Image 1 (spheres, one colour):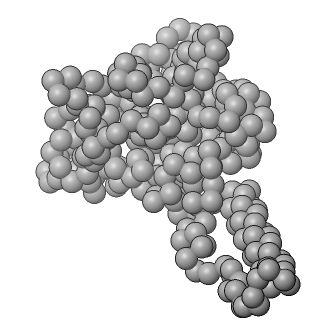
Image 2: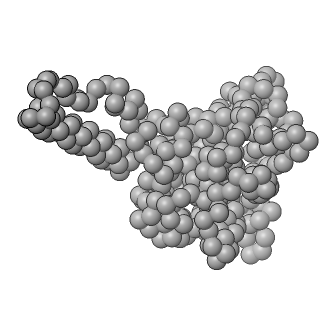
Image 3: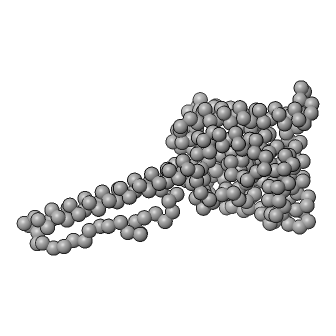
Length: 308
C-alpha cells in the first residue's frame, strides 16, 4: 500500500491535517505503508491528498482510507464496544463540522497566517511555476468548504461566519478536553480512530508558529490535549519529534529513572548471589564479575522508553 501525502515540518510527519489522520491511524493499526510525500513534485496538483494506492484500488478521503485499512485487517478499533464505536462516529462528525472549519480558516483564510506561514510552506514544496498557483487554489477551496457548511442563513457576512466557526471550535475543544480527562487516549490505553482524527486535526494547530493565535491559544489552555499530542509524537513519530512539553519531558525522565532503578536492583541482586556462591562450601572461591550498567544497556533515545 502506497500513501501520497503532504510532507512534514514543525516536528510532525505531515503538516496537512487529513494526511496526518491517515499516518496516525496507520501507526496505531500497524498498517504497512510505502510513504510517498508529494513535496517538490507535480503530484500535489494532479491528485487529491491523502491518496492510498493498493494494486488497482485508489482511495481518497481519510474516512474511506481508514475503512479500507480495516477491510485489510488493520483495525485499531477492535477493542471498542458497539457503543464506543457509535461514539467514535459521533465525535468524528463533530470534529469535521465544528473544529475543521476553524482550522481551515486559521491556516488558509486568515490573511496573516496564510501569507506568513501557509503559503510560503506549500509554495516552497511546489515546483515552478505552480508555486504561484497551487497555494491560492488550496486557499480558495478551503474558503469554499467553509462557506458551503457555515455560510447559510442567518450568517450572511464573512465576519459573522468567522465569529461562529471560532466559537464552535472552542466549544469542541472544551468537549474533547472533558472527554479525554486524565486518560492517555480517548477509549482507554490503546489509540483508536478517534485518537487519529483528534491528533491529525490538533497537532498542526498546536505546533505551527502562527501570527494569529486565537484558536491555538485556546488549545494551549487545555494541557491534557497538548500532552496528548506530545505523547503520540513521542511514541509513534519519534523520528520527527523536536522536543516535548514540560509534562512530556517529565514522563520521559520518570521512565528513565525507573529503568535506572531496575538496572541497579538487578545489579545488586546479582552481586548478592555472587557473594552467596563464594561463601558456599560446595563451591571453590572464585571471583565473578558484577553486572554494571553499560552504555549498551541504556536506550539511545529517551523517547524509546515510552509505551502507548
